[in-house]
Image (cartoon, rainbow, N blue to C red; front, side, top):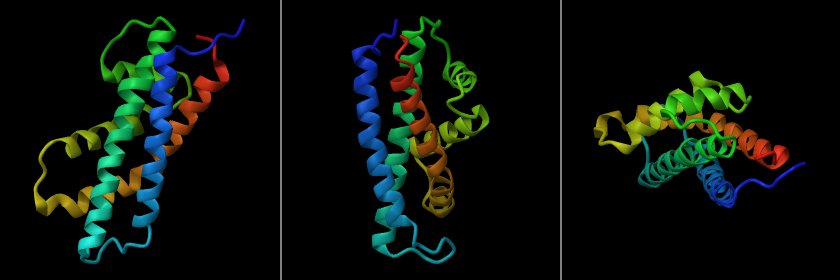
Length: 148
């Protein structure tokens, strides 16, 4: 018998859909930027928005949705690394790539020096498509299986 995911997981998925939409919007705005040229003020603002939205979506995926799936499947809560590895076993992500995304999110969340911004922006831009694919795969898993 197929059951619906818990309400909190559905709400987290909805938050993820909204966050992913904003990430896509920012990603498109940053696409035409030449990555080895100095940034204009507007381009800097666009990358700042992408960086913030990237961090938010990665938090929603890992902290809320991956952990929500674990709770729904009665998995014992563990570390973030444990949640990522269980997500990999479910076919939702590559653990190495997800840990890279998580580490980049941690860099974003903590103070970073102004000299490192260009490299940070380039890393965020490079990993954005991966994060969006992981979110879409995870959303499909929850909606399709509904076996919680």
